[in-house]
Image (cartoon, rainbow, N blue to C red; front, side, top):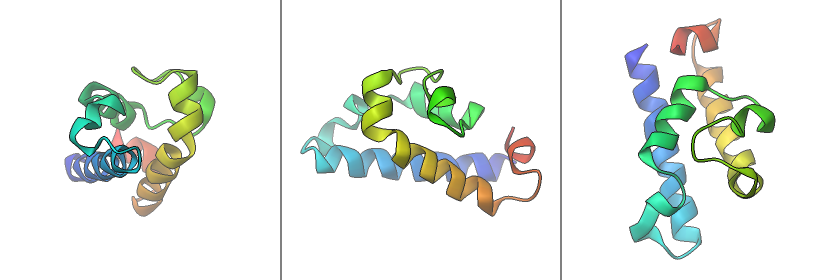
Amino acid sequence: TERQRYELMEDLRRLRLLLASNQGCEDKVYYIFSNATLDDLVAHLPSNKEELLKIYGIAAQKCQMYGEAILEVIERHVGRTTCPARRALK
């Protein structure tokens, strides 16, 4: 649903801010991921690193650096939704 997409987007924004803060660039969160990347993550809901590499703005280096954290946020969110979770979000 729209609410579930919104909540996932907010979770991903919080992750982006945390990652930026950990690298000392909290005022430049777009260095971590652009809004277009977050939109693509919400639209496609990757469940593994292979799928993550197909997301706009995520290449091998970002996948290696942030992939596990991204996938954990998505999985945690998808796990909170009703079955079948992925279809409910799409």
